[in-house]
Each structure stands twice: as C-alpha cells, then as structure tokens.
Image (cartoon, rainbow, N blue to C red; front, side, top):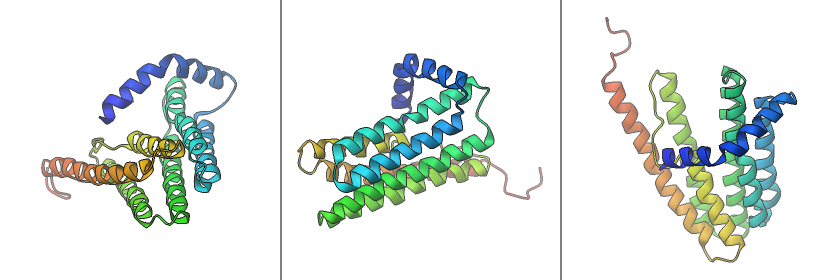
Length: 210
C-alpha cells in the first residue's frame, strides 16, 4: 500500500512539483529551507487550528504543508542529491511535525472529554515514533526496514481524512480513523521488526571471523 501510494502520488504531481522545484532553486531557495518551512506550516495547522477544534482548516493546512516532503526531495535530487545533514534534518522535522499533529489531536479530544480518543491518539503517536525508529536503527546497523502498510504518508492521510470528516459533521470519523491507524501502526512495527530479524539471521555476528 505504502509503495503504491507513494509512486502514484509522485507520478501524479510530477508536472506540478518539478517546475516549482526548479523555480525555487533558481531563486536561491534550498531544500533545507523548504523542509523547515513545511514543518512550520504543519505546526501552524496542527497547533493553531486543529488543537482549537477547527479541524477542517487544520487538516487542509497540514496536508498542504506535508506535501513539501515531495518538493524538498525533488529539489535535493535536482541539485545533485541529498546531503547527510539534509537527510538528518528532513527526518528530524518529520518527527516534530508528527508529534505536533497527534499531540494537537489528543489535546482537542481531551477538551471534549473523549478519553478513548485521547488513548488512540497517544497510541498512534507512540507507534508512529517506533515505526520510524525501527527503520532508522536498522539502517544504522547496515540493514533496511522500508516496509509496512502504515508509513508516514499513510499515517498523515488517515488522520487527516478523519479530522476533515469530523469537521464536516461526520460523527466519530476521527476516532475511527485513530483506532484504525493505531492498529495498522502497531502491525507495521511488527512487520519491520520481522523484516530486520530475517536480515540479521543472514549476517555474520559482530566480531565473527570472515
């Protein structure tokens, strides 16, 4: 699902993203600046609108600025590839943005007295962090873990649709989306851990003679 969605999204937006990326690069804008701007936009949407219960505006703002993930990546590719700091910055900003989104959702649900919804949002926040950590840790050990049904794009899409529908008056849409996301996020953690376990079994133990 993750790969299909990402490939489809990139293919569908290529004609828009690439000219915009070229224009920003010609204007002297760096991919890192776009990364930070996108994160700031997500923070505004999540904390400035979503946390106050303006779910429609919050979901739309977060979605628009989350798409900078496509833009900064395209700019980095056009300018010769991502730097190590650029990759580090992108990953760090993603964690900040995700924390703001789910923290804002949890805060708003708490003000509504929806304790079950708060629990679901916190599970999503924790599980999403573990999903990202497992991938980063695996790569640090020389393996890969780029698998699973709930990568970052899917997580933001699910909670965004739930928030938008709730803001438009659909009862329990956000809560249903959160519990669905909690389930698939936990499943993704196990998918990634199993993937790493299979790779680790085929690698020599640390310190083993070659």
